[in-house]
Length: 110
Image (cartoon, rainbow, N blue to C red; front, side, top):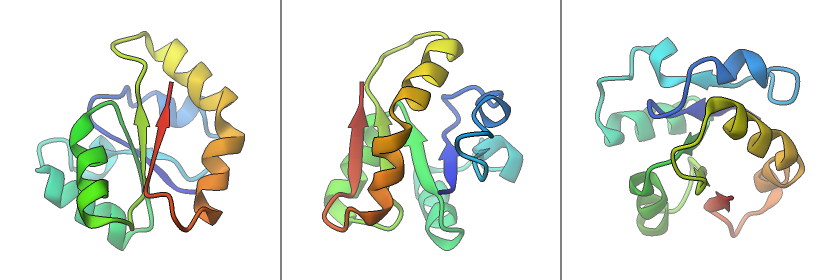
């Protein structure tokens, strides 16, 4: 499963979660940190990424457009990167199950 962390998430998550999500990346590594949501959405779709974000914008877009790409919406608020890492680690089973959930376009993770 290829996760693309939005610009509001620390780029260090890529290394910290590589054992669970080996194909994860951050928008900064693809020169997307100053791009629009539409450009990030299109990049994720073309490159088979799931977007991981704390912003409602991508979740709302997934309701309107469906997937791909699928969205993982972190609903934990402004918390330290270590807590985001822990949430994604503990939720890895459900997150990995998203690829087989044909009727789910956005997964909210708390």
